[in-house]
Image 1 (tube, rainbow, N blue to C red):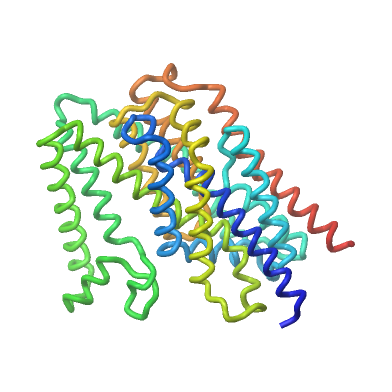
Image 2: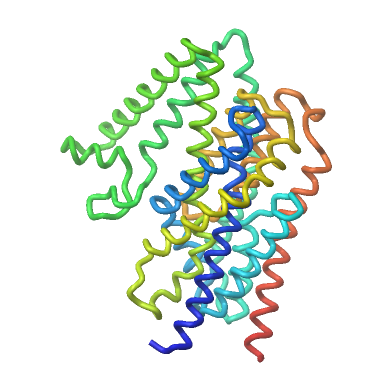
Length: 393
């Protein structure tokens, strides 16, 4: 292996680790626990610590799908060289750093995706329209689906005729059923990804849809029963524990989704380096997210939890449930998704159900949406332009 290739790979790895740090300090580290901090269920510093641990776990056990999509699924016909990887990650991380400095949530998925596509097309690659349509659909529908679900939940939880020991327990059961069916690394029969339901089926020696559904229902019933008993015994404490559990699951899902934005671009050059498995790369990205969450996330957590609206435990639960569901869907599809977009949309939806437009900062929302759209366009232009100049030089 040539020394130049090794040197470029080292630089690309450093850029990837910096991108992972920025993700941990920004979207992945801030958004999962922003509702919980806004509800005064946990302090900012403790939230940053917990989200880092769960983000690392999610990166290692669920990060492969999105990493593969970002690394090999966005542009056809070409494989990004080390210089292209460095350019894409530098642009994505740079724009994210601007967002962290200013306190506005720049969308990580938008910046990295735009930069990778721009670099790839500048190298002569072809657009992968099917993947773009899938990504575009998820991005476009997230505010409406996430905000709509949050609005519906926030409209039900305060109702006197629907006791929270029932409504919140039902939501917890739904989340438990989903977690029983999501994929985790090494749970598959051949060492690949597999779910807890699939692993249980192998242990029981029973296959089939009916068995899988039965195990899912059993998981949902068990979680719902525990939450019901906890809230019935101590309503305030039970709601707080549900809120913190949901925040942890969202942090886990954030790690599984966001790590691909940092390490995915490295995958095409692993073949040139050799002897480095994708799992090692995921661990490295997870460490970067962990450190970023611990050292840089508090500023963005404060911004999201205090600037958008005043959150209570019920509204926070309403925001975190759709955030978790959308995040896991994105991980399953292998779609890079913005956690800023997910959680902000859910916060807005839950806020509209409780307090209407008076509970929201219209200026903050407009600036945020503008940052989402502008970050993708700017990242694409910078990626295409920078790579075109490097090719000529």
